[in-house]
Length: 207
Image (cartoon, rainbow, N blue to C red; front, side, top):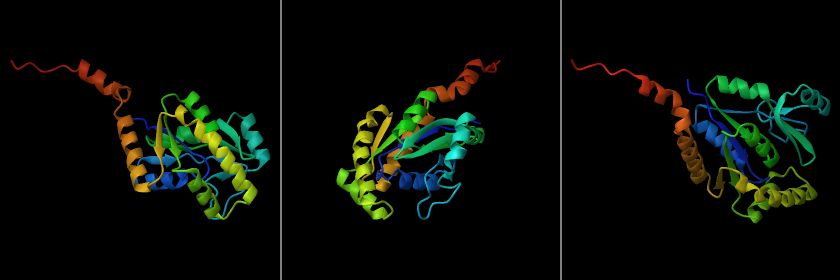
């Protein structure tokens, strides 16, 4: 069984990466979402264990002490972390592991897994970011202003990622991401075992 891909998605708040990932997972059967742990409270409609593992500050501290995370970061005043056991479990199943992380988490994962496929999702404009944040109806005006300021800083590091896609049309950007993943699955190092087997294969004589 070929080991799955490690796929890192990052975007500023309002970039639309969650919508993109959920649509992608619905269309691609071999993908599994790495559910992060976070100390923030759930938003309306979010489910524990599905969107995030919502944990206390004390639990997060304990997991840090146990070296349970492959990466963690503080984002907008809350902590987020990716569980080592969760990543290993998904890879053993031969599935692709999808990470939805901010740029700090993305940097940490790219350092730890240089073979990972890193994709930064750009919004079409800052005006659209503001519209999306307001349409959530979950954040106070000062929180939206903070996220807009942070978005500019986050977008500035997009060039550190292997791929950049613009989320201005969901159908088109899904197609772009699927093309990226198809190409990554065909990279030569992933066919190393097959190449070695063909080189070693004995061809029967015609005699």
